[in-house]
Length: 288
Length: 278
Image 1 (cartoon, rainbow over the protein chains, first blue to last red):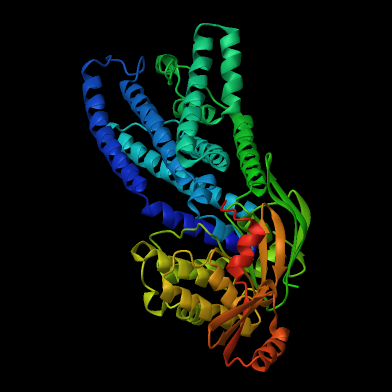
Image 2 (cartoon, chains in turn purple, blue; image 1 turned 180 degrees about the horizontal axis):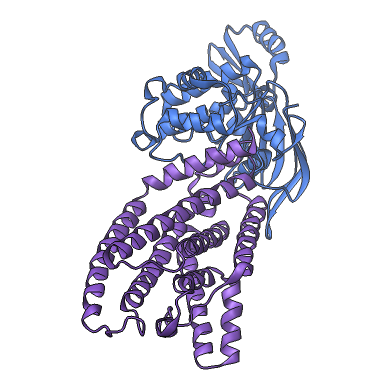
């Protein structure tokens, strides 16, 4: 069997297995609930902001202010739900499945352990990325339809979110080589929280003009690049907005979301490849 | 040779699971691996199929290093503890393994394998609806996908009832007739004694005795039925029977029957492992 053929077989197997898990239904219900709430919240936000909007739209554009704020919040929710999907799709795929006896019959087939690991990552990453793209697109459509506001960049934030959940899937896969399913889930969520906290530290450091805090935040952000990608996506929503609106409108918890540039994107891709390679190497050396 | 293991050692930290095990499985040969829990049987089987890496020594499967892709093309494996996805049907499990092993057998192969293990009518049954015995037989069918040259079975009858064991015995006889080599790891001495060409007994990571079941059965004496009852001639062998009977007849005894006694495999096993239970 060719490597590509084996990858497709494992990906199809993994996706079918994932669809059978109850967590998938939970994520689906949560997503529908979130989008419904987002639609209602967006409607009232746009309606209410008109009542106290300044008469001169050129001074402060209430539509842009409201649209960017609610869509920025939607991006955070999307990142969180995407992280849940990425983690659950990679939950227990190595050690957990080995302990359950699911993995051994597959590993002894002539396809190679690296192929199994990379196929599991490909499947999880593809689904998690597609998920965040769809949820982002629906949230964007709701924002445009309800408030009539279109962000400065539409594609960049979507790709940032997609790449962020791909890196989370890679981290989770690496954890699955060493940890049982429960420990893996807890650990990766803690890593996810650490990444978000690092982003906050970075922003606090800049807000307080603390070089040390800023440096710590930046290093942590590069070690866990998903938060940087999310922040870059936030920044891209309003990067071309000028005037007082552009000055006032600073997204992110402390208003410090900033662009990433090509270097962060390249680093995120290399990071994913390195983490996936590490998972494949560790799995190839593991006794089952 | 289907399997050649030379001086294989495996350490798990400070624990030596295998200590210099050498074992051959010839083409078309059915070899039984016996031993108490923790003797190293499963570890040796896992090394042969590439799930575990030996600390030292070498294992070749079909002439290829164990665990290599070429070696894995030649084997079928049933783990002691295994599971298939509960949502899959028996047929889907076999389809998955056909794809993973690039078997061209298609539906005919699947139907034949399910028939061989007595699951012909369960092709559309989901794993979650199967008994443990049915799942174990499905596991054997899975191991036979793509016609392996060497079949590694780790406790294949542990969850089977007597009828299921009978099916596996017939299957092993069928595989022998096809020239498939089998390494059978089992606790059931009677099963091993009945089906295996050769037996190796492991204890504490070493092969303590090896040979054909008949060779391992040592003579225990000769029993002769005479008028006064049964007399036991301890230490006598088959060759001693004519002399014993001649002496009895010469002494005026009536002889009604004579039996050569040999130790069972179970007795040989207990002697070899020193009563260890793992």
